[in-house]
Image 1 (cartoon, rainbow, N blue to C red):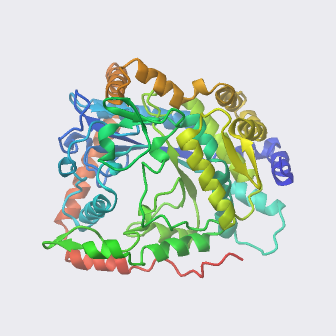
Image 2: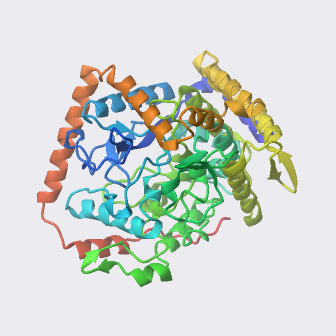
Image 3: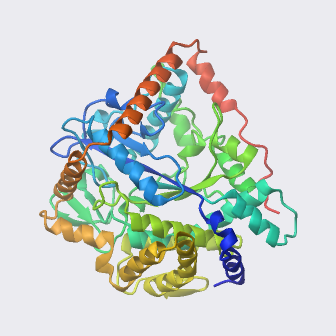
Length: 532
């Protein structure tokens, strides 16, 4: 444990400071709509759920059938999960016979031409979102865009950052905004160092349906006629078989400071990429992508974690970061847990809170390019062979077994979990930590191992297991509809969202070509890209 972590824990252990440990957390859960056979649904986004463009809690991600449920930000993960459960129950009350797919890796997919890209209406904003997704189809293929995950949005009380700033001397005086942004970037750097542990503990996609690869080369093994896998994999979703692209292979935004991060992304959205330029932005007069640059927009950068700031109307994400600094972080590497109806358990959420607070409080020096490569290698090794006996990871100039390093990390996180428990007056976070320690002692307890064991009960078929879990979760949600109050609230949101979209479409608008040109020309950020 570093001296910095020790001193910060001592400061925050004072009862007067416990209130600052609250913060906020929200969840975005993605899930495909499928039919009763486990095949991708062919129906449009259900009108009864509202507008995918303007609804604050129910939208779509890439495909028309890829639902995304977004909870409000709450001070306790139990409340967040309660809201997520309520959204699921509401959705099932509107889905008819359709099911929500229980896995991160997709259900049985049709031909690429038959995967409908999400539609958001013909307003300029709706068309911008749709054309962006057309570009994703060109660049990555539609199958990859049907992968689902859990995004965990996390922030700490701004008063906590002010308290830490008041107690710590700095070589250069920082404003409150700058200190907070630096602190979140430091949190992200520690996440890079240790996120392989999350993939071991929570990775739940060791297998996938053979048709998902669309003939791409791979080194997977055959588990059955329709299923491929790796015997020690934890998360094929987060491997190079999931989100990967040659254009982004050289894009590694520096997270040693906010200026460097935003400069790298600003460059990427303005830097032409020859293979995309050959495709152009239009085909037969129709828009096929927003630009021919490395990134169409900054959100195209696929990362396991992002610094974020709530955006204002008409504002781009990087503009918000530049203007007002980092407000929260978005963890994007969590698989959907196929054994949990809402895709994530309460103990997992409690552990994430302790893990992320540890990352925030622990010392976090700048990451050199060489160190960054080691972190990437450790993550890649864990997602493909994390349960391999004796697996070694790189730490500094030496190697250490995943289990030994994992136990050391849990020992460092333990006092952080105890701090959170002291605030609550229970042992919820320490109990969650103990559950994870058991997985290090026994790899068979990991979700990835449990998935492979469950596949064996379904003829080693990913499709059969996924459908069985989807049906089980559907029965759970349908057995108890949403409360009258929750249903009324979401009905009101649906109606309001449809009215808002209709208003946007009825309003006068500029030509879409001009709208895209103005969007692309909008100034993202003035930054030197240097970290002092």
